[in-house]
Image 1 (tube, rainbow, N blue to C red):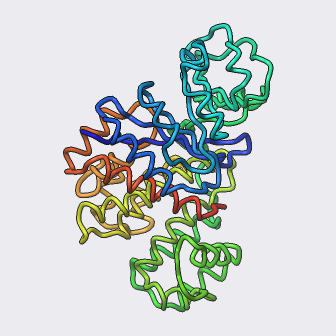
Image 2 (spheres, rainbow, N blue to C red):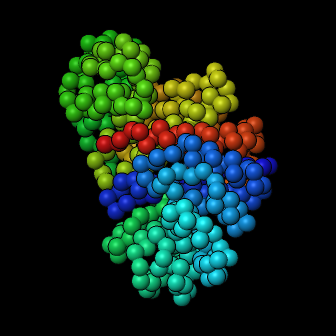
Length: 382
């Protein structure tokens, strides 16, 4: 193995919007050239990211590579607290300063702050390594929360962002009948039934705000159409019903007005785009629309408070999609597991092992991950 596998965590603000992305380099078995290549891939995929790109390189012997490596314009480099206790001239900090690249101190345990903490742009900690007092300076605090209560307490105490977002076991409530969610489910059901255009247009006209959002999504830069779609009928003519269904799944995923759901929606969006890309990497004949729907729906039970059997019955999804959502069954289940392993910061060994079972190397998985991150940033939810 030469290249490290990458995993990611969203950086979530107090209003549940995105502050950027944390990328973790699982470099235990990597070599220097592999890390350099991965850094170049990150810089190429996210050159001008809409938020900060927090880079976590675990092995300190690879940190000197950052002195010259290409990096995203909004890169921030993680530095372990042990490094900040050393004389600065023996660390990467002077090189980062010369490149005007901020750093983030990773606090593994509560201890007396070093002067470098106050000089850093950010500090990253867990609830277990939270400090009783913080050094003077303008360092913004990032928490890796285990629960929503931890995240809320962090923001109430002036925290800047959370790295990762806890996924609830169940959602609080089911959607209200007549809501946008129900309208979308009805449209998707009509598509599965090959209903005529008049029937579908009649349902969509009952929710003008939903019609507007559908057209906004389809006309976004992420979709890449050369002409502007101006009506539902035009969308069907240009895209076809099956491709339109994937975008209805995106609308369904983002229909909730619950602020707490926004990080989960973005996670599902990234899964949808990642699965589409990694499916193409494995088999060019894969059903990309179904893989997209698998990702978009993979957290829908948490967002809507409806179990997957009910969701699948309401929409009339295929048996392959249903088996994947309900029990991670084949053919799509192993790919969904891969997407899940790309999330978080401690899944490196499991990700490498699972990728090998699928015949994928780090370059293929990282490429799909970074491409999905880039494309999902182009699409505003809500």
